[in-house]
Image 1 (cartoon, helix red, strand yellow):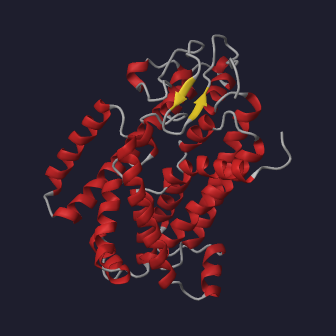
Image 2: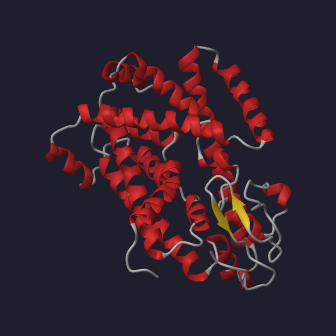
Image 3: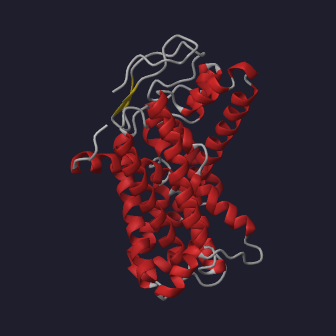
Length: 350
């Protein structure tokens, strides 16, 4: 393993692992962070510090397992429980599958909220229409150009929130204290759980484990730390921006804050950015979520049609019968599945 990284390889690793921060900056985290700022001020800022560091440490642990053993997290769990039956892997698969379903439901509801803000159309019909759009996009199979375009919109929206937060930044001493000193305002427990859950996103551990194959330890650590911490900074900006919301929390009021601070186009950017969450997510970019339900399911041996075939070819296969050399078009990263054999030995490494 090289002792130092070149600038090019380091930057490439950061960009590669930015998919993890992109996976937790979505409708759920935007809502939770802005609501926390609107309802409790800076009191829950410490939760984002805890959740961001927790994401780094857990992702690094999952990636270390893959780099050291050549097995992704799902395969490692299956191997560790080989003598105990499949109860634990099956339970994990069900939990991850339900988590992914809830995750995608949040993306669709976020897109619905954005489109309603843009058009004023009835939410019921917008929901039905977007559901149909999702089916069409999945049938087409390739949405990369759409995802890239809408990704720029989401990036611009994040930059606008950082700008708004910069204008509303409280005194440095107060901000620093809120980042490190825990506090538990009355009625905040559910929101604390929401902030932690939408940042750490447990099934992203399988995702990170699945994409870490072929990286060195130094590349992995640099990529995870920088990318996830940047995602945490955006979450902090969202919470600070929530301080400016007056009255009851709502997306309309957030859009009003954006208009007041950025200009008339700020409200449109916010609404269109929410609509962009429909396909500008890791699940929408690649249709694969490597390491999530697919990786857990394939080592459990759940039939491929039940868990779904993905864009990487990492559909769910019986243990020991996975095909080799799956190329993940969304990330440009080649993965190697386990070959035949109970020890999950890999046919090659990059």
